[in-house]
Amino acid sequence: MSEIKKKKIKRIIIIVLICLILLFPIKESCKDGGTVKYSAILYRLTFWHSMNDNYESGFYEATEFKIFPFNWIEYLSE
Image 1: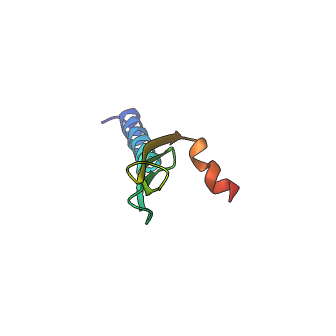
Image 2 (image 1 turned 45 degrees about the horizontal axis):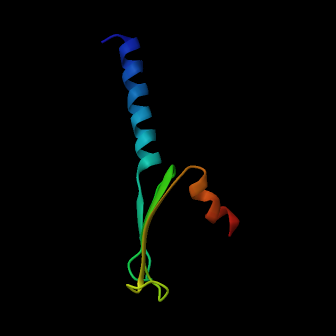
């Protein structure tokens, strides 16, 4: 293999690793009735399932998806 091909392969591997780090989610479970958050550097996905008497079923259920940089606004404002 030539040096140029080796460099290209190294670049591709580095790019794939960076993408995996940016997209790998961390799961967080809340104790409010079943809300689950998946947070990564580039996005946050939240499945809301919390107890709320304002709804007929007694639960608030929704899905929320935020992309970078809006997924970090809550953390920065605290």
